[in-house]
Image 1 (tube, rainbow, N blue to C red):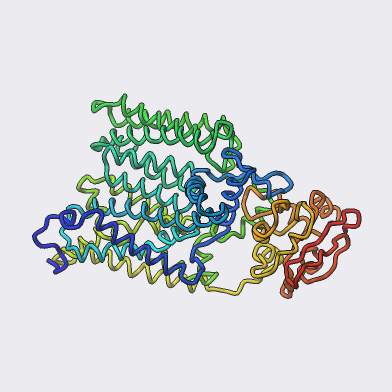
Image 2 (tube, rainbow, N blue to C red):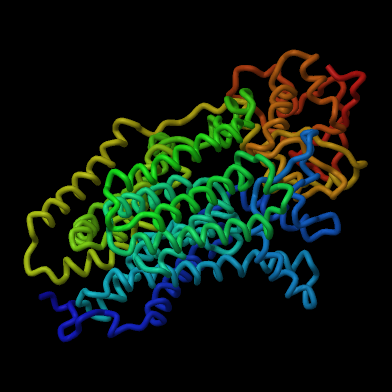
Length: 600
């Protein structure tokens, strides 16, 4: 037996309390987070944080209303209605309200943005160590080895941990917590576990739809176990279904409101998803209650499948617009020029071609972890612990999906490493490497070699940028925007990449036409027509609702077509019908008044 094994103890749970394990992981995670923000720049940041900040600040203004998701500072000129859940806004609002007696409201909100993500991190760490504690419960392991395993696990899930850095106010950290609830519930495999599975599944859908594939894997596993008459499955399904119903109804009333809950929003929590969540919860519960030990496998299968098919058919009939998916709102022009270029919608091939080998390394580390822990999971499944196997399949499904759509990368990196401590414990207490262990090691080495070899097939290359890339990427960072405070209220036609910086600098009386989000595609389409198309009538029509044009000057020396409005303005040229507004100081940010009568 290894010197790291816990001689004289039957399990680590007798040596280290849940609280002590939590402290070890949380301190390790906090160190990682503090190291991340030490230079003032977070490793994980995106425009979602910026729009979420604007959404919360507007909610806390005099014009904000809890159930009204309209953001009037985005005018396409159609009003922009946010698909994001108030569930994420609520903690920031509550913290800011608590701080308001001591701080101005704007500063209170800023402080809330800094302190809530690390508080969420504590919830995540507690869920993780509770799950790991059950996974290693029957394995002899020393305190030192257990502590090292917890710290190693935390480092491996670094990208998941960094989603909880101060200022990271997008919803992905709460999505990770929701999925960890599902994983933890599957590992528990009891009544409380069922409640965790249902609550996590429902909350993840309330927040957004990106975790629905992982929820589907979890429930597919539960259905298979129910058909196979695996012990405790019926109880777990009943309690998870009850949790789904409670969370769905509560969230509909608390975060969505009756009007939005009855509307059809294919990209957010609304009638279609409320209908499906409640419908499947009722079907699963009914089947469990009506079936007994004498019910055969065929009857169990038909009893679950037939109502499910009917429910899906009813959903397709009632909500036909959602058959096109959550992004059907995006028009063809915006889809081609914006959505098809987003890196997170591409496969991992993009990482290689863009030279992002740090992302490849993190993905490779997680793939290696998946191989290393496979033997442990298989052993647990053979001994009847099917919940652990389903939890592993959820994490593995997220990992495999990431290969094809990289937007999912944060989920497997946060979920898969929880299986490392028990897998390492098994290896530490093995007197010799079995054939399976040797195959695992060989498979891991082959995997790492294969990942490295892909760099030869997909070598990094310098990509040629065009005007569309500049429209998306130039945000005029470090430039002066004070000219916005010198003009009358109105709407600004602006490339989508400049929309959010303008909003942060502009007074409330100004709005922008486009931001890089799918519901803003009508505004993006207008901006592409105005800035890139050669047809003057199309340009005049696109700019008709707007009062100003804003641009960030940057010489576009490497693009072939320099005749477009965007290329002309970016290069500093004049354009008929656009009158420059003189900025107070020299800056690359340029603002123009539109003279619609003279506009070419």
